[in-house]
Image (cartoon, rainbow, N blue to C red; front, top):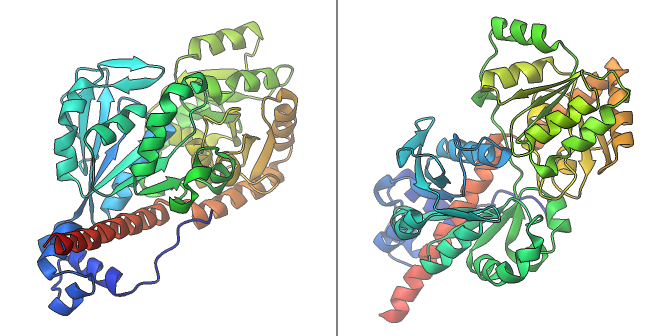
Length: 435
């Protein structure tokens, strides 16, 4: 599946764009959309120049969780807003927090109390009853998959507004429960209007996505370098004193599929300094693993601030990302490493990690769950500064060509507007038929 490409134009796009800007639309232009001016503008949701409203729906969001998926949603929300989209995020929280907050003052964030969680599927009775008012507010509903509770929300509320799903990952760990979940999942994916995968690799290897190829496009996750804080000299000096330079760096939530046990095994018998940033469910287990293996050159830092993370990215020799299961659908940490011009090491798992990292060009891609191959790749980079420099430069070039937030936002906004335009056309046609 090719990446989404900008539309070539045409009367429909021009009229919708004029409505988006709040420009005057003549009766003739309105007729190009098979309806009169008022009906078309109202259906598009931009009459009198009101921004298009997009509702993002996922079980977690910052600050409750700071994983790659939440970071990707944040980048989508902020970058599309620069193109005139008004955004709102709905998520769940285990904390007793104010229901309405904001993300960087630009995006409304509604948190709902988690009522229960079964097999990583968080649920909320308060959101179940309140979801309709968010749907009423929105012009487009943007779901992030997988979250089975969102499937249920969409079906129970009989959402008929334009809808899009960013397919972040197959369900891997809970595969035994798929017998029960599959009918709900298929009903949901069949009813949404459009599906976006984050890499062509995932489209080719997902048993689920192959059934929806006719409405699936690829839009890679993108990052905005300007959204990352500048590093103050004292912060850089502090970390240089604490962890040194030219170390291998892992950043992420410490989960079962991240392959950190493989990384620790690869480091046995080597002097390679390695820094692990993040916290998560198996952090204590991994710390014990490192201690028992005598890995004194491995430092666990826990969760750090954004500025501290930037400092560590600037100081490191390379980013290592040993995820070994398909639950790792993309790898935002790899993207961050590429953005900072660092060579990358990842595992081949048939997902977006090997779309970001091209073996032998931007770094090394090694067989999954192979400590020996991982060790060899790390030693090769550690012993060859010129190779690190060449691969790091190639990683940054690939980032600039494919993975900027600006590119991602433009493609999503195009899909949003096309979906709303088509809904307007169908709505006008239906009203004429009824009349």
